[in-house]
Length: 346
Image (cartoon, rainbow, N blue to C red; front, side):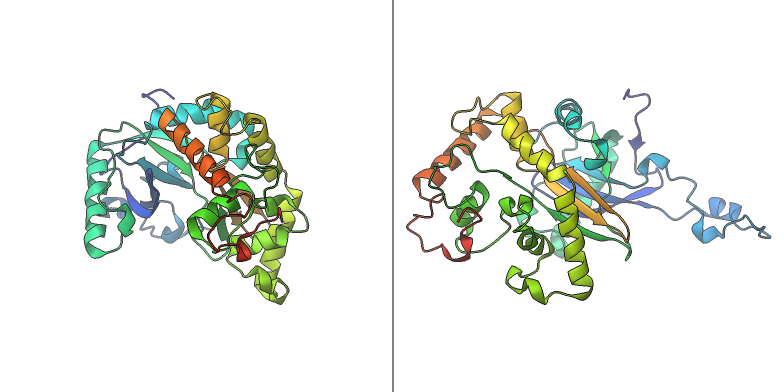
């Protein structure tokens, strides 16, 4: 997209960015139309209504650019490890988009935020810190005011009662190629045991096992798998819908196959700066968003950002060595963490 045709967003463009969420690298905002000014409102004061004239309450604000509909705004933070937005977008278009149908990806489009808009967003982040509404672990890190671009991304959030929303990270859908043969934990469960002790969580291997997928869906929904047969009514119906969808849809199986194809050797033996390996690590850290309506399920992968740098590769290798040498794969670690934290491999 050329600069001449690219959307720009400024403070006086009739829209407001409303804080929705943030991670280590980005802040995500919902887009809200500002109230119509008096001169525009006057245009909607019809003297009479014909059969095809909607009331003013359902008429779209005249200043809302259609390119903003069903989109969220994602803005990059200023940290040493974040990648410039244009570079991330190029990676997404060249390396990720060709791998999946467009309906299975959170789409992202570049736009140009004004410097005033970025400064205003940062000022509001500081206000949120003062009034206690910004997560404490995110304090003192702000948007990059010298960044030329932001991203418009598919809005997978739910703003009404007709949809339900779930998100989770599928992580490593197959065992790490570097793991010992006698492993009793998959890579994700081994890392969780090392970091969180006995706290149970989602085992990715359960997501692709028809016998274990009810356990996985309970984890996704925040339900107790030990009470699986107690859930009925709306909860039970939703559990069944998600379970059927994940079994019948090919998205997770496609993701699993790509993880294997892009990294057949494993972290310790791979060329850690090759495009394929970095793509594999991206695919092992993406998020699956499920937007569930009365008769449909919209499933899209997001958080498919570029993984870069030799420092990152050394971190991954060091982590893998810790898991192997510490006995976390084989459940022979010295810490008393076994309990519920063994995974499907057992």
